Length: 227
Image 1 (cartoon, rainbow, N blue to C red):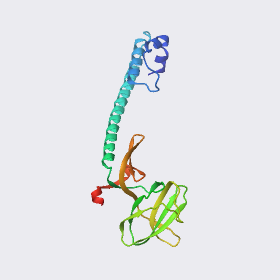
Image 2 (cartoon, rainbow, N blue to C red):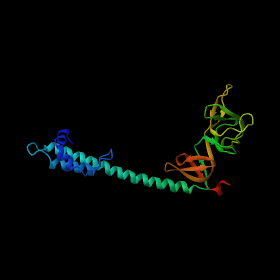
Image 3 (cartoon, one colour):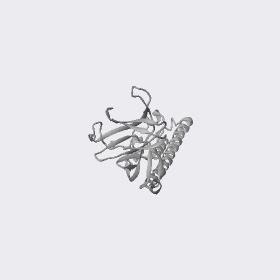
Image 4 (cartoon, helix red, strand yellow):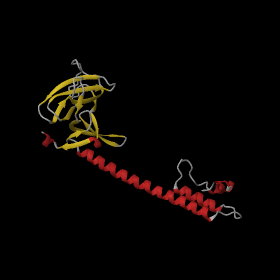
């Protein structure tokens, strides 16, 4: 809409558009159409709107109409996805899942269980690191076979003391030199889904006391299969 055409409406423009709601920062297609009609009705007869300008106004309205339709379609798609995600999450209650999660929030009495994929036999080093980057627990496991192995964290620190509640990260890997460097394995949180919570409308699984997003779930097993 040209600046000259709008500014030339004066007080007549104010009266003609009094029914338009400007309380929102967004102009709706109804508001736009009302403004366009008011502009046409109140244009200067001696200096009417040029055809090119009118076509430009209609093109703008068409673009706004398309954006509105696309927004509505996107809302419907997102609503359908939310419904599907909720159904998927609820169907996992009582099942065992393996999730790509190696950071966990520890609370007193927790025993988070992890699955790791060993690519070699021999020693494997477990490191528990606090959110500040401090290694609070180091443990050496002996691996007889490659493949999947289970590690259950008992919540104890380096000297047998229970760790303070908070966020920790687990890593497991094979030593590759005398300096203590390791080749880290893939580590996954595993356990039974006890309930589904919603965070800002997004369904989140509760595995033990750990929250897991659906996008992090890599595999699911029925309880009778896992037993």
